[in-house]
Length: 144
Image 1 (cartoon, rainbow, N blue to C red):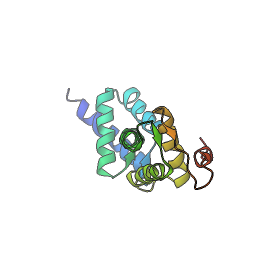
Image 2 (image 1 turned 120 degrees about the horizontal axis):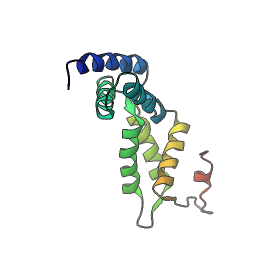
Image 3 (image 1 turned 30 degrees about the vertical axis):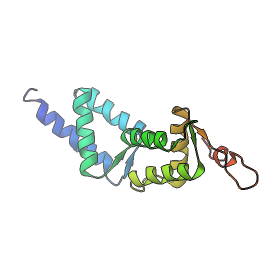
Image 4 (image 1 turned 135 degrees about the horizontal axis):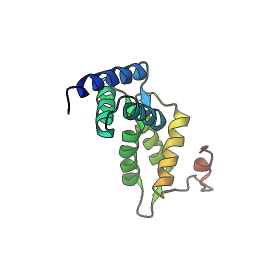
């Protein structure tokens, strides 16, 4: 690290703080744009820019989609049965977990879409639900 790195990092940190104002959640596209800005405009390494972004997010209690996705994936793996199926109640728990970790920065419908996408990435299937006729309609009704 040279003497010029510190002022550069500080300027990038101020840009990150400005971009995070009034937010509770930062999706992967927004995170990527900020990191690209740190790399191209400020000449930081990816590790440096990522460190500044994560520090600012943690200080301001802002959830990053990348980190939130990792913990949600682990939760879904835990909730799945031995046949890699997730019950509707467990899906709803995963959605509630996602929303809680996002600090309310994600709508319930958006959280359902994101959790469904995570299930598809993990090759998990929905478990049929219903008293008389058991279907997966509850899962198909969530727009991807």
